Amino acid sequence: MASWHADFLVGDWRVSPKLSRISKGNRTVGVKLKSMAVLATLADANGDVVSRDDLMDDVWPGMSVTDDVLTQSIVELRKAFGDDARHAAVIETIPRIGFRLIAPVAPLEPRPAKPTAGSTTAWKFAIAAIVVIAAGISLWGLLGQQDATRNPVIIVEEPLSIAVLPFVNISDNPDNEYFSDGLSVEILNLLAKTPRLKVIGRTSSFAFKGKNEDLRVIGQMLGVNYVLDGSVRKSGDRLRISAQLIDVSNGTQIWSEIYKRTMTDIFAIQDDVSAAIIGALQIHVGGIPVRGHPTESSEAYLLFLKASVLLDAQQGRDAIPLLRQAIDLDANFAEAIELLAFSYWQQGGTSIPIAQAQKLSNEAAADALALEPDLTFAQAMYQLTASDSNSDKLAIDLLGQAWREQPGNSAPLRMLIYELTYRGYLSEAHRFALQFIELDPLSPVAHYSLGESFAALGEPSEAMPPLQFSLELDNAFAKWFVPAFALAVGQDEDAIAHYEAYLEGAEITDTAWVRELITSARDPVAGLEYLDSRIPRIIASLPGEYARDWQFTFNI
Image: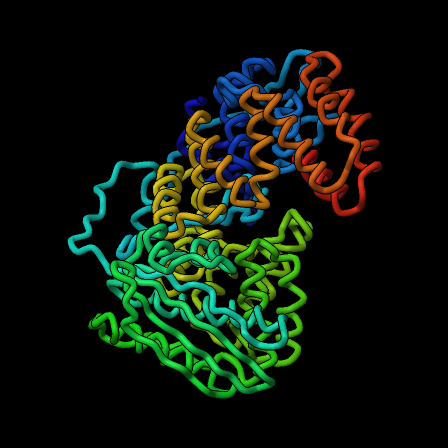
């Protein structure tokens, strides 16, 4: 790797490798980690030409990647600097050889000043968005140094643990299943706020939905002491909710209750269930966590619950219109607006262009804060998506605070793991991914995060098993990243098999082009020219939804 680790100057631009961004005056631009590594390698050359092969060996050591990957990094850097390849002032192309940095380079010692803003919208499929923050860790201290060795947190007393299974919808209307699922998630989130109680993540608990498994077996599989399950019957505004708490060690029911209420009482029911469980477990806390009363509209709340379930299932595109409907019903529903801000951020680069997603997320976060200024998650999103923000460290600290306030909510975790990884805190991201799997062992996103953290640390042999397991658990991210990673490490046959299986699963019978594309792309002479001519024809032949997905894949 290049030796430029401290900030340095390229012309009148300040380059910050650790933050992966460049800045001049009031303008700050974030670049991808590998693009920053390319820039650092060129800076090391002191104005000499660096061949394409040397750049590839330095930035992608031991990895089999196409020449197009380097070209994309150069294009990104030129765009960031506002440089023109035909009239280069920063990076000059030496035809058939490589590149050289023609702008003057000078070292710059870091100054004690507020950090400048970096882009928060790189490719989100390339950096997973789940992270766990251990209680008591200060992110201000965490960001003081990169990848430093830290003493482990010692837990003196093993906490009690519980899994909240999805409540069964026994209503006549199958659409009420979203309500029963959402109610389960809300109770899980409340319990997760209880000190000395470990609550297994929603994805792992919901893995047993619809399965007639013995609760003792489920508890043992998830490694918990207790299991909460129940049922919901909803008829109009009338509710009948039953719940029971089971001791996994012997299958004993230690608490049960039936609640007959109306939708206007739904928040009180959630508080009552959580308080009863905390009491049954004889956990002594300073104050029982309560849900609060976020909206007066039961219809808006139902839409919010449905959107929350969809977001947890990685279906953010479908969650956005539901949240908009909820806000139309109650313009003061700040939590729905906050969740909409996250939904926009999550969809950046997929169903929504990145720049538009950043703008929409920022506007929604601002709207939420106008209603409730103390919404920590909204504060973090507002900081991260503001084009003129100079408080990246504050935003990351706010994400950590949002996670501590809502330990059952995975949304702040997704953003935090992305931001930490994007800024190069790789060991921290890896450590948090391991902790996340402990909390949500059947979460495909958690295993995907672990695989990517291994990949970011340069350990491809360790990365593939968790990525494969994530794919087996049906992670939408993994279906793209697993074959892409296989290509990156030279496992072409595995990549072809994955891509062909995906196409066949989508009932696309013509898959011969996958092998043709990958094989031809490996041609060092004609590969790039072939891709430029062939890819548009492939995309044009695919159905609309899949054409969009593959267009995104090819443009990475």
